[in-house]
Length: 215
Image (cartoon, rainbow, N blue to C red):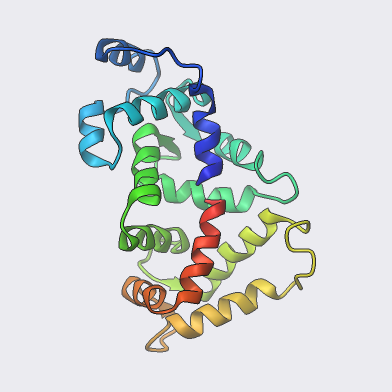
């Protein structure tokens, strides 16, 4: 998550030391999409109003229209992975942020996901990760979906990060995960199976925590 957060907030460091609510409300009217009020977002997330103000200014600096389309998201995200191809993983990540399936990410979408990933409970983070892997949104993760995500992560990290990996490394990784997660051997992983497996197995949780570095 650090990659996206860093880009969207890096221009806030030079912000003016003090602003009042009227300033922020006026600023929010000067974009194509006006986000929900700060009070409402504060109630819906784990961020303070001041933190939301900082995040919003960074978001608006990168996305003056108030929304991010997939192409822009990919461009922002790829800056942090110059040695690999981040386009496929960025596509999946964009879809996970775009909860309304609108083809764009609003500020509300951004801070809601960020709140979960940075300050949510373990269960909330696992639920969000499950939704990322559930590409077709049918409520299950199959081997093909998990393989697609893992391969996209390997492609993004690039050969300089994983110089000795074989081409079948993503498949081996997924096979090991699936054997532990698919408790009833029906060929798919449910949300309950996913959460239970991650909580029971430190190796799975450790791997997911490593993957958080690319979210």
